[in-house]
Length: 360
Image (tube, rainbow, N blue to C red; front, side, top):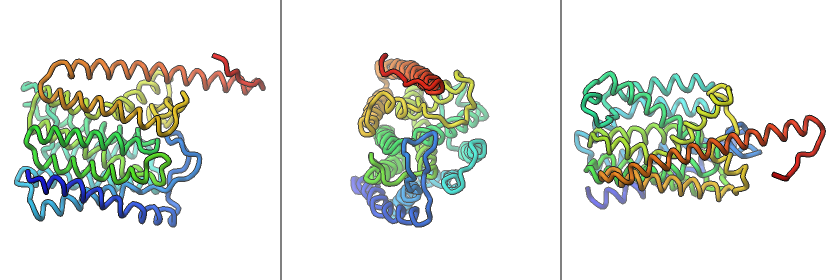
């Protein structure tokens, strides 16, 4: 792959988002479209969104330009054509939710449809076990479930300035390295394009954020990152590849699994928004907005590095990645229970007309 092609993929996508995002912000303000305070974000006032439109435009324009002047070859062109319809569905879904606030079940239905289309078209996630990987029905079901998971997990973690964009930036950069290792040039290009739009968007979204990417942006990032992960497993079907892509997306996955686990534990509806995501927990324990994103970036960077090393076939990073993930899950789950008990105690004290104690 030419160095110019690599540089162009990143620089062009970054530039597009950096230029168009302020314009999109002005339009969102004029049309009064913004994220209002809810159970997921930490803002107490309305912040304009639709920033995801610029991110989508940045990636699409980058792929068109590079495809026109450099080409992607038969494999790359086929891969991108397969992405067109399902990713468009996800973007339209995200825009509809940003404008009209769709129900969670409605969103999930379209996510399943889009993911299934992508899986049936031939974009597959392989485990690296021949018995499983030769069973086409099993592969399609796994891929569909995985893609729904990636689009949902990035969407769920997008409740704090800079988190989704920064975590996705790190994941995309790691995927670019993995794609370079396996020689999948088309995956290197799209991973770098994703990195560029995330970095460009962070100019306006890093705490204190002036615009949100909205569901159109977060679900777009999620499903495209998931598709890149599938492309890597197709380029090199192996257990190490599967483990590597899972580690690279570890933090969004962790937050999504914690959301399901705590809601089941607390006997609450799984689709009901709450104030218990990882960024909420860190904030509740006194970390500032910037400290929170730095902590999450650091955790994501560690897991992504372990993923890159795991792809190389080393056993230690695979084991270490699994251990760290389990420890993070257990640790944050316990913190979530403590935070929930603390808020419940405060509510009881207030209901009895007393002032809650600041003592432990």
